[in-house]
Length: 311
Image (tube, rainbow, N blue to C red):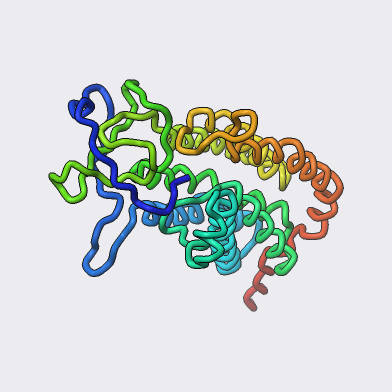
């Protein structure tokens, strides 16, 4: 993801006449009265609202969890999911000690960009499991709600990445390639871009859009599974496996993160661990606990019927 700093990049003269590609001429930061607003943060906020309303809440209500309880769990999961995504990004940085440990505010400065979604998945799953224990709810059902939240919200959040230009592929002349041309200040010949090594006026493959499309495909699969009435936990395990596979594929298009051992990027190594360790472990736990937890929590959160009115 994007380093948490704006890099001033000179416009490449020979690339000034852009044809046949998508040009983005949007300031990643704008003023709303006295407030400085980042498009990245704005779309995250929109994503949280929409994902809760149309992803997690319908499942919670259908399973008998009250709206107030669902909101409480969602807030805790969002908070720790953001922290998990940011911290997992932080520890992967080569300047982790000098720029993060010694500057603690940078550890949580997710508003500057720089998030690793696998960290959100790990922290979110842990948070949901703790909430399930605390509020005596079937944890597999909560995990299903969490992944529905993810597949609805993540594509919306990627719009902020597209505006920022912080998830980019290789230079390209494909019709959907994106070039960034916003100059700061206007007319200066310089533009704001969040990635070193990338240049204004050059079209790149929109890796953030590929990520959004990949998540949408996963979301369609999950909602089809839910419509078929699969048992609690199946959607959550399916999501972890499919998301890991998607990252193995889609990170081949991402050039904004340097490759590591064997030419694989850090997210791809995490995806391999997820497929080899996390998915089998989740399947094992699901087989051992799903039936017992379903029986234990069956009807536990359905509000009692009101007594009939006296005749």
